[in-house]
Length: 123
Image 1 (spheres, rainbow, N blue to C red):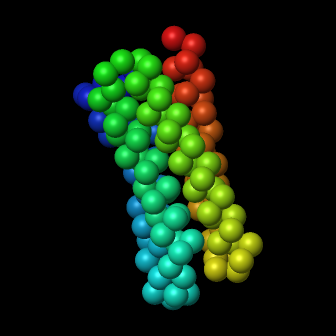
Image 2 (spheres, rainbow, N blue to C red):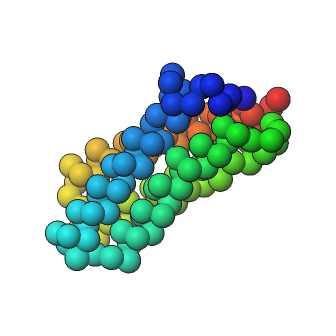
């Protein structure tokens, strides 16, 4: 289980989920300012920043089960984020290079979370 002492340091999922959240915030700002898109971008902002929030909550989990639950929620939020990114790309709000770059980051977060959830449920 992740301990509070590991907060950010070398903890890959904490770092990647926060970095990803910051990218999502910037994309949300771009979509609002440049594309005047408010609905999908708001959904993207909520799910994309929720990933890191749930990972951070897992750091202070009361039990292994609580840890697994928080990480599972983060995984679901990451999957939802991928969906909003797909919709934004397929509706031409973001370009293919923009989509490919951020979507690959999302997939990486999903893979990390899936691995953590799988291993935490074995314990």
